[in-house]
Image 1 (spheres, rainbow, N blue to C red):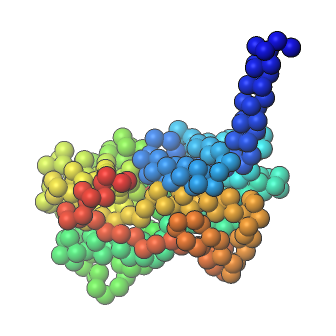
Image 2 (image 1 turned 120 degrees about the vertical axis):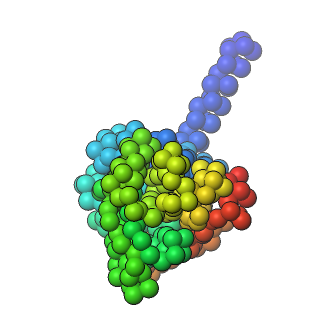
Length: 330
Ligand code: RAM
């Protein structure tokens, strides 16, 4: 063999080795849909975990629109690709169970995060925070801003989203408390986590309910679209928007007065935790069984509750005083 041929052979061998090493553990993060800044921040956290763990390839994927059908198609192809693990934010708790079961039966670790798959379709679910706290916080923020009385409406994501539906159920319960007796929930609408549809739905709420005082949007896409609608309709100071948002997307609306306060948890930490936990399960460093713990790097430890769910930190509230600082992060 000439020197030249030997060099090509060794370079090819090295490239092959590097390729197999990189593909050792493939973790897929299946999000509700592409083009959502919240999930892009979660992806960044996932990539951080993959890098830290080493030998992990992160596949970030999701349908264009937030549908269960789109996610089912993607999971089918991930099964064919023989990925090691799937972490999914589900567009529907039940519709995804059969395909997730199929993945698990092929030895793939399946966890849900952010928006859960029903129990039979995953090993455990990672809630970003306690569901009751998230629901209560949103009513408390709306109430405080509008002085405890008036008409409020909810602008959600899709009608099947596990996480938003759980929060809305809590909000409706919280509204029964005597302290909120003067708040009247007049409508619940769905913008499907699409900016244009959310915007149209927000305009619809403003036209249909001339006495509306607050829109609560428990979705980062919906809250941004609602704040824009209130601004465009020249209703800043009359109708207030609150809910769950990204400081980077909300800072302008907080300064304009369309939004007084909003809340969220750290989406980077959520993505980091999901990928880290999937790795721990897939490499048998944790069982994920109820009552057990999973250590998740710099985030600490997850404790799996009896219902196979786990919750991270409390949601954090943002307003004029702190939104700019966090806007640089997510
Ligand atoms: C949107 C998505 C996501 C939710 C956040 C608050 O980005 O619906 O699932 O957790 O809002």
